Amino acid sequence: MTPILLSIATFMSTLSGGFFALKNQKWIKKIMGFTAGVIIGVVAFDLLPEIFKLISANNINSTIPMVALVVGFLVFHISEKLLLMHHAEEKQYGQHHHPQVGVLSAFALSGHSFLDGVGIGLGFQVNTTVGIAVAIAVIGHDFADGLNTVNLMLANKNKNSKAIKLLILDAIAPVLGVLSTRLFHLSTTNLVIYLGFFCGFLLYIGASDILPQAHEDGSTKTIIGLTILGTLFIFIVTRFA
Image: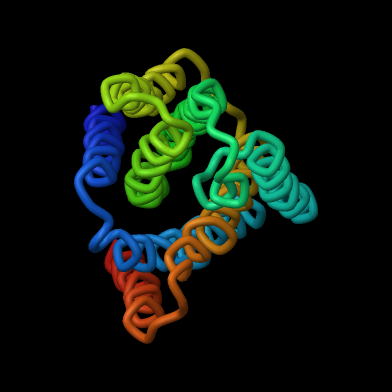
């Protein structure tokens, strides 16, 4: 039941990000700065220690999850650059406004959101602590996904009503992802591979995606401080978990 409830939280987070984008951008850079810190903290203080614990307990070759981490980072980096999924890239081509580009990019983000949900479900297959940690990172990330979905649609001259429809699709996707993991279970080795892959994904969206977007208007002490605060928040949470 907990994974389902958390997937509903991702649904609300995505919707909140999208409607926030429709209304204003006043606080978005600060929120994204904090979110990046949270995601990096989850990788460093929860997921990687869990990988090392599983490796030690099950005598698994440590190279395997590290390769998966690099693959996860590169897969999402390459797919993002090829599909032009984020509004920061679209600005470089501002003179080209094709509604279908916004739609295709929004569908790509929905695919990512589905994998976010799968990540939550598989995290709970490891244990509750990992599942909750992954969910925290995904909830923060999905707020940015909601923002990006709406921004991409509007940047490519789609109507608000159509942007909202794609936003709802993006919001539903992680719920479906969580539900899908009730149909299968992974072995310990495969769970370690998954955790490594997901760490690479989270490192990418935290350090190479969300954080640069937070500093688009120039680095500020406030955003840097919020990123550090987000990291410290997860450090404290994992110490008590």
